[in-house]
Length: 564
Ligand code: MEZ
Image 1 (cartoon, helix red, strand yellow):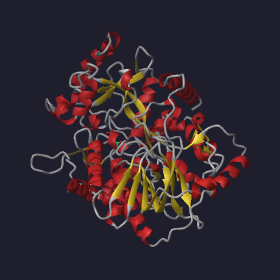
Image 2 (cartoon, protein in one colour; image 1 turned 90 degrees about the horizontal axis):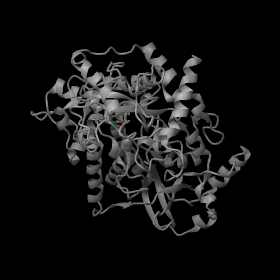
Image 3 (cartoon, protein in one colour; image 1 turned 120 degrees about the horizontal axis):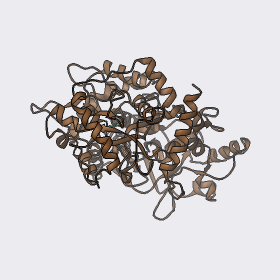
Image 4 (spheres, protein in one colour; image 1 turned 30 degrees about the vertical axis):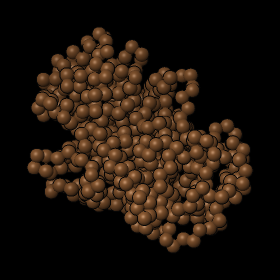
């Protein structure tokens, strides 16, 4: 395929400016400029894309329409006409100490630590074990484990990146556990990239003050998931085994008479049968919500990322935090359309690639934090009209990847970014010689269920780890801190849940909170219609995501900066 003629004209300008740019660092924005660019161009500030939540613990708070709709919706069990009484009287299909909902990196880490701490664990996951955003994370995992670095510096970077809104206790837990997590992952078999002398190879990510990004080429998440999944599977034969159920998403949590967590109702996707699990503690590790396609954005997320964990926790009374902020990864693929919105790892910029507009001019420092970088791309394409527009109307800016080999030596791209090279080769685009077109894509849910440093929530017996949790990253997460947080808080959740389970006598599970929920919904005048958890995204709508995005973003952005 390669690029069409009209795009080649713009590419020629990028090539022409490359020799001069090679030795030219673009200046970083100052704090006021960062603030201004965010307020004017970042999708979190498009007020029409948000509304107040009308029911539940976060009543009155702002959330994107799509998430507010899911949180307020009718429970699936009620929409589908099940008798709640019959469900709770049903003989349980399984009993365990700790039920882990979700089969990504956080769920696997939690299960391993819970089992090590003496708990009988069941993992139940919506799709296959490992179908998760963990698998999709490419560029690396942060940890301050080098002599020129420290957890204190890592702490400051996380706080600054998150607009100083992060929960300080959670950040402390994150950065203090980080070196231990890298050592743990390595001991289990993760093959991190190393220098010839055996030390870890580390590079910068956006917003890092030290090179602390550890990677396995450009498939770090897949490598971590491979190892964690193998470890879980290999413990199936131990005296206290970890059981894994696939294609059985949770559709509701069970409480007991003291309103402690008592298990969950699952749905077997093969048979549509409801399954009951009684558990002394539950860990929600069901990930993010990119498949809700906020504001019509395409996403880097895996197919099952529909925010189910948030809905389940919310309905039993858990508070959510930072749900009015989403992360748009600056470099989603914008061409060819077959891979629209798929991740182009930040590692490409970490290795030295610059960003250019249609005229081949640099317009932003390549490693600003993601929120600022994404907002700068949107400004370049909208207000300044300096983006490239493809024949289908998709906007984008150039990520000048060939610069990497010029700066770091021939063969660097092939060695460091093999997955990216393959991804673009399929369409006749050669990363070592041609720039690639990128535009922000929905990548991460910055907020989620509020947790404590042990991953516990305000609901006794309910723990949350990974992307479903909120507070660690404030209003913006730095690259590589998600692969880290799934391990840090997955491990902490597993340990804490196992300890708690030892002291709990099982109660009588019920679903009475759903009657209460329906009562609150009626009081708030909410209609029947959408049911949740959503479980699988609906792609039957007629308008394409590309077309959907343009009216909401372009018109609102235009209106937004006219009034500023
Ligand atoms: O932390 C991430 O989101 C990540 C590693 C993504 C990437 O750009 O590779």
